[in-house]
Image (spheres, rainbow, N blue to C red):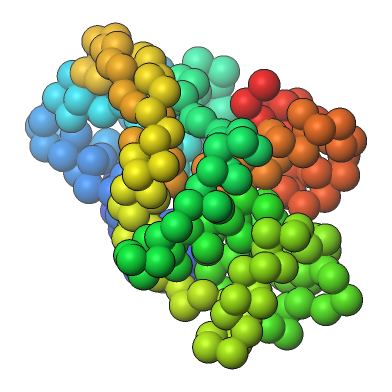
Amino acid sequence: KEFKTVAEYIEHHIKGLTGKKPNTVKQYGQTLRLLKEFDISKGKKITFDKVDLDFYSDFVEFLTTDKKFSPNWIGKNIKNLKLFLGEAFERGLHTNLIYKSKKFKSISEDVESIYLSEEELLKIYNHDFSKNKKLEKTRDLFIIGCYTGLRFSDFSQLKIENIKDGEIKVKTQKTGERVVIPIHWTVKEILEKYSETAKGLPRPISNQKMNEYLKDIGEEVKIKENIFLTTTKGGMKVQTSVPKYNLITTHTGRRSFATNLFIQGFPSISIMKITGHRTEKAFMKYIKI
């Protein structure tokens, strides 16, 4: 089939996706909607041969000024666009290689991501949440994430059969790799706590709800250090100060795991075997040292 415009090809591609994660398909759909909006704003439809550095500059300007997106969200949409342009090229739909130019780049900026120290984690672990069961279960699940290094999609779905001989063995959902993780004493105590009620594990909740409850947990145990954030929105730098507990998410557990082990002297290559980082450069950027 011949496609006259980039948006037309992307739309056709999305409709044919099978086996892709819903979030991935959702992001592709977002890029398609933005491209259509951009087409309308320019009064013309973008064909493959019209994708040049002027188009790139105008599209980034549209996402920055009109949509007021952050650099990282702009970068994700440019990354998706480059992916579609590359696939269309491989299928022989065009011969335009401008998307490979260094100037046609997926922009980004560093985001302030926190980790929790061993002291802060034990403060959370030892706090009495018995009068608030939703926070207690959230805390227990979070601690499992903090001492296994697993993503939410993995630690929230752990089953008793994943645990044997003092180790957790799991095939990760995102990468499909098998990892083996020694069981930390806090994780062991949590597993024993739920051994008779939930096959050895707390009942999973949604990522969104867990992120909400984690902020309540952080506030209750008084993790209130002020964190200064500098972000870009609509092309303007904005600096704000927020309490640390407002930045705690399920992913904070994974980052805390990697950072704390590195501080304790564990070889980075050993930690990377669990976190799945393929290069030490990427790992060192990930941990908060």
